[in-house]
Image 1 (cartoon, rainbow, N blue to C red):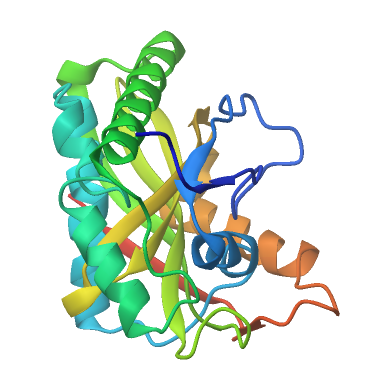
Image 2: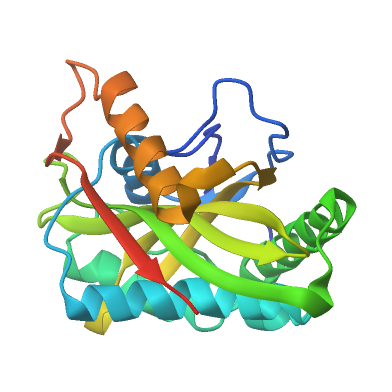
Length: 246
């Protein structure tokens, strides 16, 4: 059975540096118009109420990703993505809930398995590149997720508003600091499903610390980006979120 999906071809995430050390090699990811709308619109502006349940969901999502990558359990890490064993049913239920114009993410087991294989390959590439940057996976300390949350309304694609989060998973290894940038969608019972990872890199913190670094990136993002005038999506003002993982 052949692949039947619309590819996501979007570069960059929310916290794109003006001259990033490395951009990830882009791959074609299975997605539909709803996911593209979330990635294009919600990635440039996020806000909405950030309560205890959201905080717990973001922490669980970021911790699961980092735990799987740290211990080289890429199947565990891949499971929480939109095509993963845990993520796919949650995402399709959420697409149905919000009344997406095209609620089916995948058609048939062949396309789903291919999407999962591509994701594992990408996670493996990320792990090898971070190793080359200086990560000692036997000495990883999870630090935090810093980013933003938003409610997004799109009259052409959604009958109800959707909510997503985007930002960085921060961790430390051998006195070096690293960040994995991702976007995720809030699904049933405040479970967050990762829709994509944008890049991964060694970062220089200096004396400011992780939270200040995340806030600085967030404020720069608010200052420099916005929705185009002809974009039908409605996005609330960005809201900064910071969740410690340790």
